[in-house]
Length: 558
Image (cartoon, rainbow, N blue to C red; front, side, top):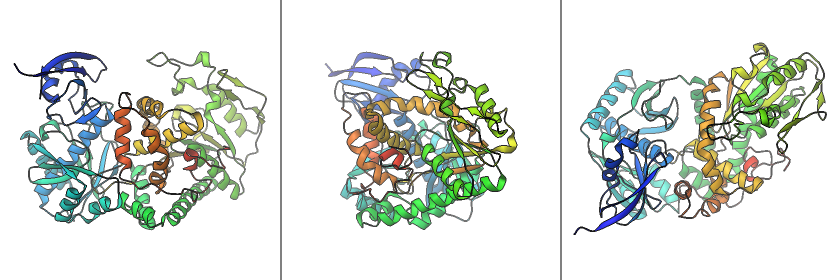
């Protein structure tokens, strides 16, 4: 009689069922029993909290998690597998030796550079067609684990000096998965899909001097979202490229080398100087255009508060006397706030804001009237009056920070002539190498985890558990309006992952294998292996955006 194993199968919708299966069955085979319960394609699996390849044999009883693109790990598997298909198709179209770089996120996809003089619409069509041919052939993707020494030998053989430098500089990096698609072999750090046929949805289109590789968003894995131009975001990335040249830091290996050679203090000073220069430029734009209402918005852990207060300082340098406000003080009374789909008060919804009061007070301030600005007491859930009775003259701008700042409905009753909108986010994170990104959402989660633990004594499990709902709120309330901004500010610090690692790594290591947050903690720990920890962060300026998260800020009144 064939040996069996008992598996608790957990589906993407949170439901589960326990069954017996033949020993050696794969997650892909198990998923066939649940097709009617899975609205989206299977992308990844975990056995007893450990990621496995979909076609790997399962040898022991326990728990099997089936994951689609709505899961962060499943989403990453799709994107990494699609990257292999993309570079394999480029090789077929343009031949061996053509270098391709995955640069950054843009227009619901990756902005990539193909290092050839023939970047045209026709080339995009040819790459798309070749990717579709490989997909329709369902070409297999094979996988082989290479330890550190084997990985370095492989990279030497293909003469990939940059990626070899990653292993030479990242001492904790213990190896990677060598994946082959047709005759293209690349090193990855997650399990890829077992064949190209799983990569059903994608789009290649030319954009400026590069190509966009677009794919479904994790909020809706059923389609590639409609294309939307993101000119300002592209320009912010172009500015970041200039900054990277000035700093001499393009990839993880570059940062690691500066850490190892004790050259990071100069990197910190130049990086912070670039931030200050940009903030001063924005202040100059505000004065030149005579703007009075300065609206600052961005996703969680972008550094909005530090940025806003540093902007106020630069405005003062120009002879202006800004009034600083936060939109949190304009919440409705707690009993009047709406509920979300889980029955909790939804403070991230625009309807939770007392828009009538906000509009009235802003217009009164602009008109020179005296206003009793409220302070919201989060303990009582009520606005408190009488502590900030204020009036301003017609030369003073009002700097307003809050998640809804770029939503036109927030300020629709205020004249457009007086508004200046700023979108702030760590728009880029230091890429691992030419084919692997460190998602900015992951960098922001590390920031938030460190800050929440330090200031609120929250466990890393809490941050990991809450992060999907935080991101869902951003997709609804923040990202749709970033095109409204007059200027983008990239709050990424070139050195920050080396600094954050010292604080984040021990927090992530606290998460135990039996806890639901363990797989995500392990995924983040894997990313941190690419970076060497900064031995001393005392050189980080006390007004740095990073200080908002690691502590020691003179701006946050800590």
